[in-house]
Image 1 (cartoon, rainbow, N blue to C red):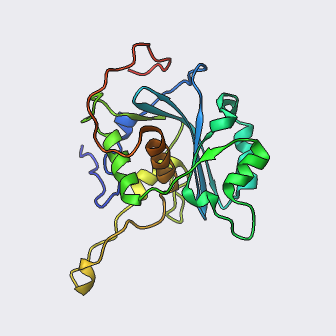
Image 2 (cartoon, rainbow, N blue to C red):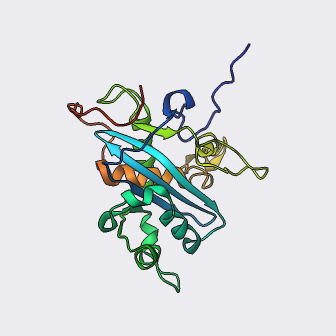
Length: 229
């Protein structure tokens, strides 16, 4: 009858399936944005809608060992694409502006999909703090401010890598500290199983700004379209 305990050393320990995963239905009257991290081994993309202070992650593309030319047509064929505003489609990792003897990710999205993506440098610590804060219920809404659709899962492959986005919350960890001369060096999280989480952080910081706490704001007056409690 015992319940499994939380894995130690997680970068985002606040994530909880019971709190943050529920059935979401997109609001056809709200724009959809794509929040993207074109990782070297995994191309992660969220389809999100923001209502007030709350972010709804409605769907995703989580493509391992695929490139932009594979992912962009898949995104364009998605039913939510019709709600994406081409002039301000969403956010991509700041590295998406870089050219490596080829066109940048931003240029590829503009050329193939005809959309403009925003990007800016964001420190990793800021990304982590922002996501952790918005997953908690100690905030202006007194409830989590991020929700994920219930068709997403936390499947992990035999290689220990995430197969779907929610697995990253259970896999992205800090390295074990060693009691030696190296212990005073700055510690950074292990750089794998984190592409979707980083994409989420880019979007949150772009949309809401650089903060971890903010004064209480009045909630929106309209009833949300989502059938969430």
